[in-house]
Image (cartoon, rainbow, N blue to C red; front, side, top):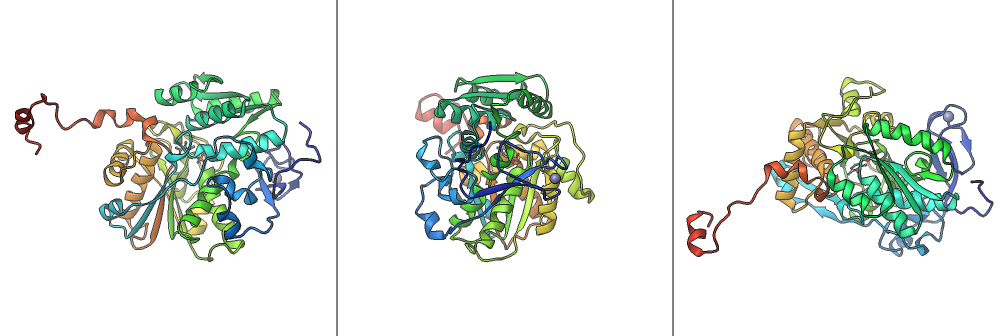
Length: 414
Ligand SMILES: *Cc1c(COP(=O)(O)O)cnc(C)c1O
Ligand SMILES: [Zn+2]
């Protein structure tokens, strides 16, 4: 696994500790040698302009000059996620009393969740770093994305999920044919096991464990795309679902980078985090005014967000407080209501994480924490077809009739 001098990770220059600032060379490292804090990628960005980005491919590789990936990354075909729709959501806005709302619909990615972004970056870096197997502990969507990307790359995958996962997510992972292990425990148990396995299998890249610094940067592309799709502007406020907290903190990092590079105007924006009440360690810490969250045992239908001990939870608190945002949670009932509201107003069927985000959007609008006059973006991070059980008990056809006009008239639905 030695890094060769030929290693090409684009603009990435080093790994820097988030806690103590200690810097080390790029490589397969994820924890600080000095304090065990998480490592982040440092960069030396070259000449990145709006024009150079717009001339790039219609996927996340248009931002390769801002990511820790080889400069020729797009020449190795894989799943090419990104440039998902930013949908103007006027009906949902009107229902909630907002004046300008967009849904960033990441269910449009190759395996139907935002996880394809982080996996694409992790895979590109893992290949460059010499790993042989693409692996992960997952709450479901990451397993889908890793299994698919590894299949297309022609390498082995090994994914580990809690055994109580939604049946749709089990099937949509198993179909890709990699090594797939269900574990009798919750995500936090699976994550701990993955760290232990990574300690023995040193050519296994657990995308969100031992190559996490590279993986995490993939979420920046959500922030870049939102700004580009708004016409190179930042929104005033954004609502983001929180599992480990990586997506939220990296959207903020992306906005900061765009400001520093002069690609968008420097203006204030507020970042809001969304959790389910049955797994709300970050929302609870925010409301209590704590600097550090207390881990919980998850119990919610929003399984993709069911991380009781989120790796980036503390940094989510920092971003929400620094930007004037908040972290809020909603009950499982409100999650289901959120899924139905998004579907009925905008024709977008989100998974439970989307329901959490719409539910929190509604709750924060009603409480006045969100400014109804400000431009607002929410993330729909996954596809409702993967969490059908959440809505199956509460939706049904309007009527069942015989194939006759009389039956139609008698049903009273005209
Ligand atoms: C993983 C996931 C998230 C949150 O990701 P983190 O970066 O871990 O906070 C949100 N939505 C869906 C659908 C996910 O699968
Ligand atoms: Zn450190």
